[in-house]
Length: 378
Image 1 (cartoon, one colour):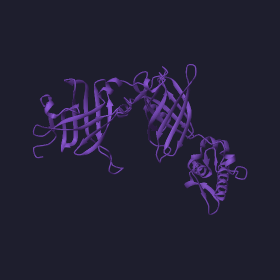
Image 2 (cartoon, one colour):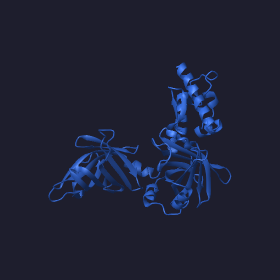
Image 3 (cartoon, one colour):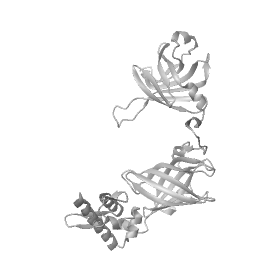
Image 4 (cartoon, one colour):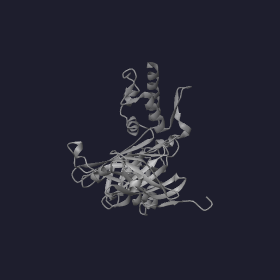
């Protein structure tokens, strides 16, 4: 292991020397890599440790190779550019993106100009709000991170963007991710962001001065999360919208649903405090996730379990529940839909009742509505 570590230090030394020979200073190399210990990494005799500044020498060699398009040839102990790509060493290498995001104050989707200089420095200018942000750009494995700062009214304001870049670490035409920051009123907030690549600054400005594609605006809308600055002293003080209404719906139920020929079936359904649910259908237990849209409407989506990891999961049953309006103060009225519960895609009325109620007791209150998506030939 010592000999490998020593040999890696020698390779780093050669790579740095090669770059210096191409008029790239060690300071510029460190800036591009966001790494300040090159002198230690290339000097094994004085710094023999395996990890320096949270990186092994093997990891540093890989970063040097990726950033500057270098290849080390062991046969003749030399360093050269990959396929003559020395053009990537330009000290003024600028990429332009248009950032699409949701503007809190005006409640609209907006755009800003993003400049990435030498795969390291980032500036973002929002021309409508006249905001200017500066920060650092870094790629770690399959992810891109942009850390930004702007001067607020009295103190700096920070923003972090996390984007998926995959195996194409630089220059991807579209980047999707999230951002987190603090609103002007002081509330922490997060939302989705889309970065769309432009060929030049002029091209980016033309894109900014046009309306955003409606698909981008649809992707961004209703995906903003704001945390109030109220800080509880204990978990009991932690609250969320409509908590009382939701907790009243938690419990074990009989789920009554219609089947063809004016018949009814029932099965067990459980609503849990952790926003999950269980239902048994055809002797199989299905897990559900719950959304509470308002004080009245609770939605449960039950999904099939994945058999093959790469398979997409599609829902088996969706139930919309009115948790306020109840028949005889016990029975909740629901609307259900399923792509296969009734063999054909279906929509139907259904009901949730306390677990100790039988079909005979509530049959007179059930309204039979079942619509099957099938043709006469089916």
